[in-house]
Image 1: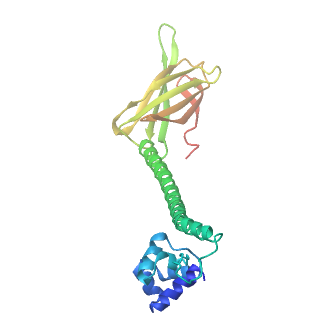
Image 2: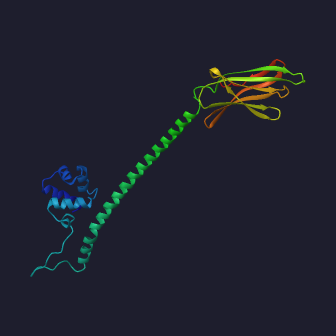
Length: 260
């Protein structure tokens, strides 16, 4: 008779249902059913509780034979070669069951912890990505607004008595978003040799930024680009490519409208 059959036999002797037995042992009816079908082995504490409930000792529940006292005229016990086998069986059965229960418990705990740790790691990754996204949105200009909403350039010709001639070029622009930490710089790059310099924009009333520089006229063509800084980030927006500068006239291409 298997252990499951023995549990079923003792349960029926007490006229207990699987559900009632499960309630007394603190397990579900399905667990009792698995025990009786030998689909699972009860834990050691459940075996001890069942032996007390059924009124049998643990060896009887596990069907471990015990040596019988021999009397006068009674047959002798098991043959000498069988006694060590049964004794060894009793010695290793309970520790083996306890070890099995411990292994099953540790396996379940490890699996559960691994799933929980994996889920927490995935959640942490999502949160870190979201925080980085929010920080970038807080530092950067509004992504829905263009960097520049308007820009224009003008020139004024000068001829000095000393024979010096040239043009003062003025660049004005309106940024797409006004911020307290907004800084604008005009980058000048000469096409012929890559010579470059920068001019700081000054903020005027109404949110307009303006800067001016002197051009001798012989340095055309050159490109003018706005450097837009917010915090520790800088964005570039090409403005104009000046093709020629003559007395009272300036010829240029508008680069800032290309992205609109």
